[in-house]
Image (cartoon, rainbow, N blue to C red; front, top):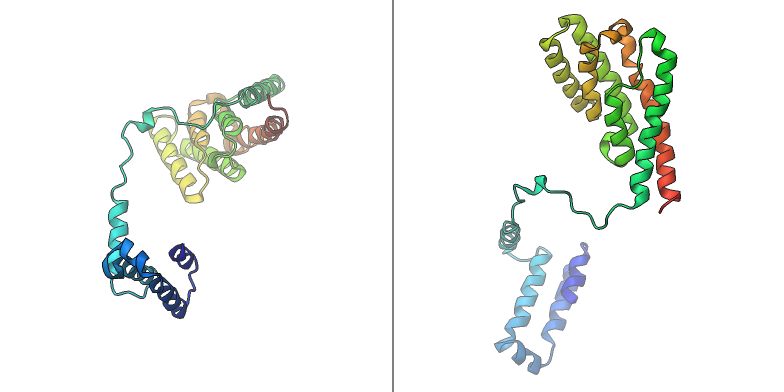
Length: 244
């Protein structure tokens, strides 16, 4: 117990170490005989105490012991990533129902918007929004669900897709260059948001989107993210207050 208390205090004075050592050596002889001849047990305790506070000459040896013990930790199994993630408890019905209901409401709202915007050849129900719904509703605490990541990646990657199409035209070169540049952009800006990586390819292959030009960086991507962000707040509120 004395050793644990001394280690917990990083500013322990050397005089206190000597006091603890003296108190250890002042135990009855019977206790010394039970622990070993000539008080070897207490001597080892005192040495260990001094080493833990940096007063011994064998500090490097102590570090070696720590490193050696840490090297005995088993490496992660190669097949662990192929197994379902272990959780302390099964998800509740509300954890399943509310995110699913949020995704249904998102596609329903955007589908209604498509009816209004159909004459202009613009669709809000683009495939990347399905992935965005999964991120925002199923794992709202993940880094990809952060608002900065989502908006920065959506706007930046969409603009990269337009630029790649303008430079290279349709085809494999434009897709490859746009995807590589989109990933580099997300890494550089610290805004990793996987669904946004599909926006450049969607623009390059989507003939009906070409007339938007650089407006594609804001519509439908950024506008759709605003709608999904509002729905995420509703889903999180329902999950927290209506559990079953």
